[in-house]
Image (cartoon, rainbow, N blue to C red; front, top):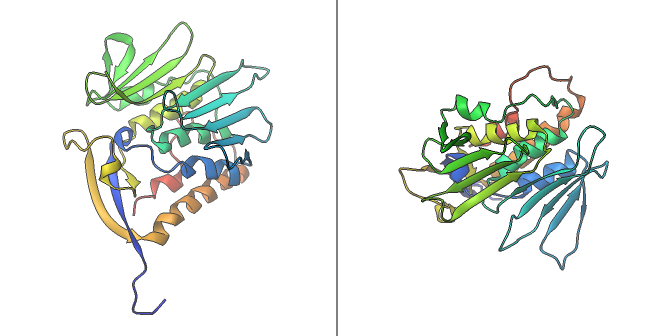
Length: 260
């Protein structure tokens, strides 16, 4: 590069709230699972899908475009202390929220007790009961979180108007470990903005009453480096001492410093 040339830049749009930021780059989930957590992948160039399986072959993440269903599915085989379970996420579910679940699943330090309360992060963030005591709504009214107290299944629905057409839905089946659902709701309530490089036209909403946007140009290398930082952060967990905190899981440090 000529010393007088500036490095190429990318327009980054910072978006909040997270749940209206759109899907984002799937690599934020899939690449760290492979490189930092040892999940293996199968590659079929004739199929538009990604399959990743954990080293112990108990967990399978499937990313597959589906016009009529969920694009992301995380399945887990039965374990000695828990029956099989699954979680699924729509195409526009922000990847940071899906990553919160996979990060908690693969964290060797995670507290896997069943006394986690997925509603706690939402209540602390000011979400209020809606329609029934088992349902919470976001302050802007675009997200509903509902638990089936009989089965233990959870649904998270996001829509702009009257919930007649969903932007995205997340579903956690019966027997899903509560600390994973809590990781998701903690990300759902997180007020910090997230970056998107596809531009505002790709966002599911641009209503200033619902969404806050800010734009800036940053070096392309800085954008690419955020994923590498995340991979390093997750890889370092393997040598870290066990955690003793009982606070809900949070986005890892690498994600906290993604914004340029």
